[in-house]
Every structure is written in structure tokens, then in C-alpha cells.
Length: 353
Length: 275
Picture 1 (cartoon, rainbow over the protein chains, first blue to last red):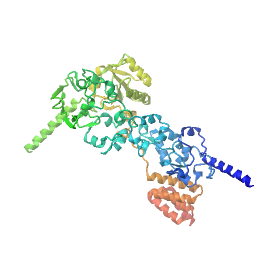
Picture 2: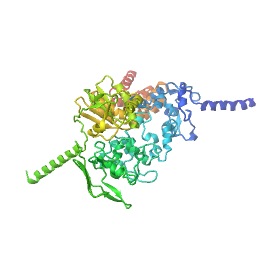
Picture 3: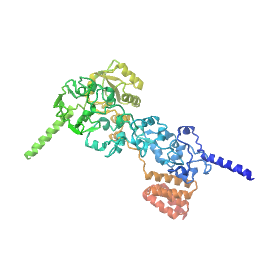
Picture 4: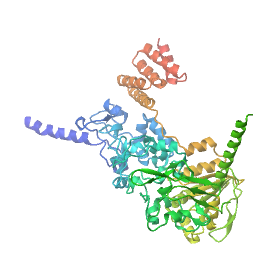
């Protein structure tokens, strides 16, 4: 009898352990295919539980499962989301009202959440950004780029900017890109990954009311890759980082994604720019040089300025941080730059209507 | 009026006049101004005006072969279908530097059917004071410029769609602005948490677990002290446990917060009938 018990009890224990480890059976196979992070079984206390679901903690298996017995709760009630929405009606409403919906969330809450407990906050089945980039592989690649965005890995990670259930902004952004970005980049003392100071954009934009069109359109992502990129300052395409550069259109890919390249490369024009003296294109004159071409930043602020056309007030001159005024003045038929990189020079736009 | 006041007024007027010159010099066509309606060649060999007599004249300035323009054309393909049969006229406008075949291929790839006009020497682009591509300009039936919106990578079609609907008078200006500046998804914080506990208490009560339901109801009240449903579910739980006196007190709080709370009204009545 003792022998029989010695054999039977371990087998019974093994069976029970296996049964416990098995996730509740969910009919929709696709859910498990999509749910790559792990199974839905509860984790053990020693693994470090950070969040736990009320019904599971109180032993109310029957609220979500077909059975009430914690040792054998049986399959989950289906469809899964309907079960969740019994209590989480705010999420149901959010998904219903959102113009853009996260298909994974619509499909099943358990694609991203463990309905029992979790080592993560909010019952997440895995840590962000890992759980997100399992599917969003393009973002994973962007994160591996040379330049990183701290927002990707700090605090709420992906949820810093995205509303993972649904949103009224494309790409499930919680708000328009500008509101997201300036929501963080609004203080002094922030530094980039190399320790260089980052601009307080709220202050900059408040003090400089002429905003570059993408800024005015609340679209930082027109020029920046928020997940990471190979260009400095997370720029989405090439942009010369220095004051002088030999002219090569490829180096201005970012600017030319919206501005016409002929704005710079055409020696003469009567339509492409108002910065011309008669037909002579003054952008061409300044920029399209094979040696020390002035880059866009030489005369323009990229985000905001006090003057129209994002003309800078001054430019850095020499290595000691001295600023040289541009002294640009616009008039009815053109403008003047005075006592700056050159002596006073005026241009007359004679083809103005 | 004293002399200095006259001088100040004259100075102010001259400054205002100068600013007016600057505005004119900028070449930017102000919204609300009637714009010219030239007849231009089309990429398929015909001729067309940039605007018709539609309520919404949508002029899409784009560059074939460029990613942002390509994305806009794809969005427009769906948009043109959405507004089919309505008083909306879509035209594309490209620089004469692009070949007709190149433009047509781009439209075909996007699945978009609309006339494309050729802006010879980029004159129209310059006259409208545009600097960026793509830009979507819109004018009303009277050909007054209503919008000139440069490309954004996010929500560009939503912006365009709202502007068209505004010109069609399908939505108000406030509704258009709401579409242009969409609200962030709002979690009602503690209120949301309280509602979850209310639901849990309801389910536990339904499954005959009054003690557990009481815990959930307490949590609901704790997270949502001003939520009528939290108090009424507390009342329901207490009534189920046979404590009608406490239940009625909870129902009264619920009704003070929301006089239409049906559970509190029914619960209070049931308790009264038991006495």
C-alpha cells in the first residue's frame, strides 16, 4: 500500500502541476498565435508579482472562466474581450469611440495582458517596449539605430506617446506629435544621449512666434524619427549639421522632401523663391557652392524665429561663441542684410505682383 | 487732441501701413481672398480651370516620385470615393518639369482618378505663395481661398477631410477644429477604477458571494466617493446581507448624487416593503 502511494502521489502531483501550468483553454487559436510573449497562466509569487487581477486574487475564477474551481477553472468564457468589458467598460468605450483602433486589442485583450497577474504593471504580459516590438519589428529595427530616443525606454515606454487600445490620431498616438514632443521637451536641462543640452521647445516656440510649417502643423514627425534613427537629432533624412558644406542635394534630403530642390540648384528663377535679385536666385548664390556652401542653418532657424521665413537673428561666428547679427530687413520689393557676413547687400524682387 | 497724440496716431497708422506692405510682399495669399482661376493644360492633353463651381474646390499640389506626395495621393484615392456625388472637385497640380506619363503612372499606382493640371513655370505655386509640397489648397464656390495646408506626416487626410466637410457645411467650425486637434483618449482615472469595482461587486453579488461583493463595493466607494453607482451597489450588497438600515443609508447617498439611480430607487423601495 505504501509502495502504491509512493508511486501514485508523485504522479498525481505531477499531473496537478501540469494542469496548473496549462493556460486556460481559449477557443480562438489565433490569439495564441499572436500572443508570443508567454502563456496566460498565473505567475508564481517568487517570480515577483507587480500587478494582479482582482477576480484572480479573490479566487473568483468563475467571473472569467466557465468553472468556479480554482484548481480546475475550465476554459475561459468567450469571446474574451466581452468578458473583460463586463468590468472594463471604459476600455470598451475607448476602443469603440477611437478613430484608430489597435487590431491586436480589438482581437483579444489577452494578446498583451495576462488576465491573472504579471511581473509588469497593468497586467502586461511582457515589458514594453519588448512586447510591442515583437510584432512591430520595424520599430525594433529603428530602436537599434545609432541615435536613440530616451522616451522609448523610460517611464511608460511606448505608452509615453501611444494609446495602445485606440486613439483619434494616426499611429495610435495619444495626441498630435507636437503635443507629445513638447509635452516632454518643455524644460531646461534636458540632455541627449551624448550629454549635449536639448532645447526647451516650449520656451523657444513661445519666444519665437514664426513657426516652420511642420511645427505650425503640429507635426514633428515630418522631420524627426521618434523611435530612433541614423541621423543626428533623430532626423528622418540627411541634413547638413554644419554651417558650411559643399553643395550636394543628397545632403539636404530632409529639406527637399517638402521644398523643391530647384529652390537651391536653379541659378535663375522668377517663381521658386522670393529670395532673388531680379532673376538671380540668391539661395543658389549662397548654398550651391562646391566648397564652402552655406547650409540652410546659416540663415534659417529650423523650428521658429522672430522674423518671417524663419530667418535667424544672428549666426555663430568664430570659435569663442560670438554671435554675428544678420540684420535682415524685409521690404516691399525684397530685403537687405547688413553688417553681417558681408557688408550691406539688398535684393529687389522685381517680378512681385 | 494734443499734438503728441496726433503724432502717435500717425505713427501707428504708418506702422500698420508698413505691415500691410510686408503682408503683401510675403506673397502669401490670405485666406478669404478670391483667387484667380486660370485655365491650365492637363497632363492628358486637355485643358481645365483650377476651380469649378463646386462647394469645395480641392487643389492638390504634389510632386510625382516623392514619398510624401505618394502617401497623400493614396489617401486621396479613398477620399475621392468618399466624397463621390457631393459638390467637391479634386484636381492635382504639378510643375511642368514633370512629364505627363510620369504623373499618370503615379496616379495609377495610387488608384486615384482626378484631372491633373500643369503649372507652367510654377507660376500658380508662386502666385499662391506656396513653399512646400505637397500642399492642399481649398477654395469655396466663390473661389475664396479657405485653406492652404502643407503636408503633415500624421493625420493629413483627417485634416483634409474635415476641411472639405466644413466647406460642404456638413460640420461646424468647432467640429472641424476638433478634428484638426483631436482630443487625447481620456481615462477617467479613479472614476474608471471605481466603475470596475462596481461591476465586480455586481457580478459577485449575482453569483451569490455577498461577502466578496462587499469588499468590491467598499473599493468602489473608496475610489469613487462621488459615483452614485458605487453607493447604490453598496446598498444592494448590504441589502443582500440583510442590513436594510445601512443599505437605505447607502441608497440615499446614491440618490443624492444621482436622483435617477434606478438601483438605489428600487433597492430603497424593496427595503421599505420588507419592514
